[in-house]
Image (cartoon, rainbow, N blue to C red; front, side):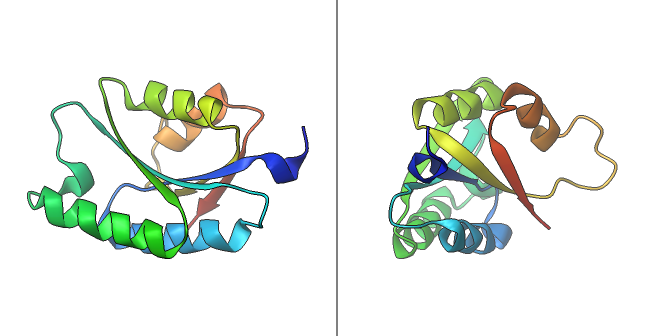
Length: 125
């Protein structure tokens, strides 16, 4: 399948970095590529690590909308499984993520890279 027909998935975790990651995903997009902004939390947790969940979700929705992206908020018992499933179901060719903290041996980036070897990971520092 052509690279141009693959989607871009921007994984966001908190308000501090999400605009920067969304902007980076938007810069990589061309007219043939869908842009998805995805935030997944474990069942029972607040979105965006905020007790003001509705404000955080509204902020994320606005940032995604301004970039012309489709926002998906996911809750799952297993975040890794949910992100892998989303990438597979939406023909994702590139995943944009923030860098994990230095020294993290089994961080989410590494776990997803092992499970999605055919997808390009664009790690924004």
